[in-house]
Image (cartoon, rainbow, N blue to C red):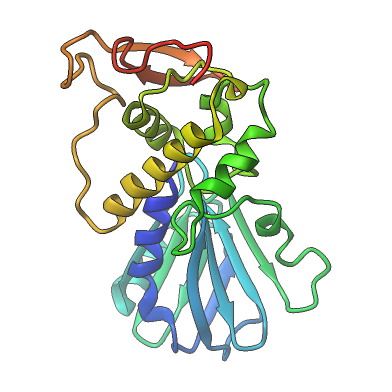
Amino acid sequence: MPEGDSLRRLATRLSPLVGATLERVTTQGLPRALAGRTVTSVDAHGKHLLIDLDDGTQIRTHLGMNGRVRDYERARGEEIVTGTSPGRASLVIVTADRVYLWLTARTVEIAPRRAPMRGMAVAALGPDVLAGDFDSRQAASRAALHGDRAIGDVLLDQRVVAGIGNIWKCESLFAAGIDPRTPARALSEDKLAQLYAAAHELMTESVRGGRRPYRAYLQHQCAVCGARIESAQLGVPPRWTWWCPRCQPTAASC
């Protein structure tokens, strides 16, 4: 599933949409009454992409595990869309010179300005880990409310902080030296703040194209101490998790 850094890069890739007039919008092959509307912004919050239009309508997408976005020059894009089954073409946005195609996205929501549920899905999320004003101490305070849960699970909870997925869960825990099975209550707020600051730093670096090699995720041997990287399916639902037993020791309290 794409994580927050991937969605930020996608928002940047789709930034040419801003100022463009929509000629056609379809969801699973069905036309939507958005022709003539102008895109005013393209942004991301956590794992959600948000496209705002000049009449207050918002298009919100979540790619889920297998969704992806493609964009094409107009003529080529029309050919691609024609050859794609409506069930796979979750969203198609056509402008004067480009075609943007969402394939097998988990969620596509088109909400007018006054729609009763407009914005509620994003409002239920925690702060975006990649926001410019992200506050790791505020994030630590939110995480501390989930003291009985393993910290690996808390990191993935989008209601606590939005944008962290399984990759950056593993990498952030490694950077902060924390075993993923550690109960959140065993970590001081300083340690929790250090963890969320590491997530913010690593993911910001990834957005900027400077991602370093993974230290834990999918690894077999620790590049720092040489120990064998351990892995197990942890959490609910279970997710494969990688950690170094030496660099991330189990601790009763940190």
